[in-house]
Length: 148
Image (cartoon, rainbow, N blue to C red; front, side, top):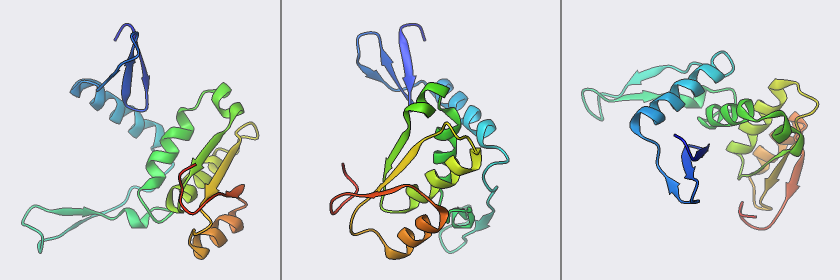
């Protein structure tokens, strides 16, 4: 992997071009993420879905503390931030589920040096906004969608 810097699953070569990780590198990243988030997110159950096929299973990520699978990715990202990155801060633009996941991950670390901000569209679900406010999330509204 010489000459490449890894960021978010895609490697940047020394020439600046983006390259996909090999299967072995991707598997190693998944294993590292699994270890990083172990004990910090729920281990959600699998349910057989015979109406979809004899070997189809559904992963019930709706049972996560945040109500969606986003808890895994947000927790992994927050845990992988360097001290410098934590001090710079984390910002997410979301319509709600990722915002809840980032808030949960950031607050679970109980790190006063970790700064984060949630950017929501003005059209965000009132229920999600209320939930985020109840959690004390630092919210900013911007535009009609979650693109900055």
